[in-house]
Length: 104
Image (tube, helix red, strand yellow):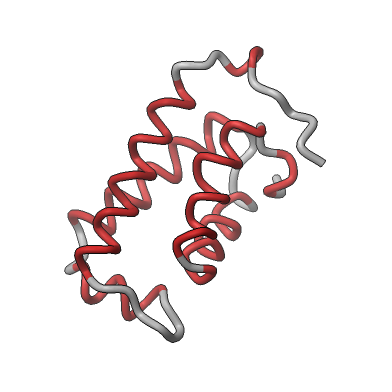
């Protein structure tokens, strides 16, 4: 799927939030959408990716891997990842049939 196929709620929660933080982070979530078949799958995969960065990687290593230039601090990166996880939980409270899919 393409990011344009995501619900408004999911797009705002993940893509727009990541973009406000740093374009390089947005790219990670954009690429991820290509491997997903549904809005819920995208939420699940995004959550897994974020939790992987928080637990499997040293945050410094993740920062070096994700960001091409203008690297954020570890504290700022952790804050945005925590915010994205909260956003995902909020979107999940809206049943998929009540989400809006007319973003574009």
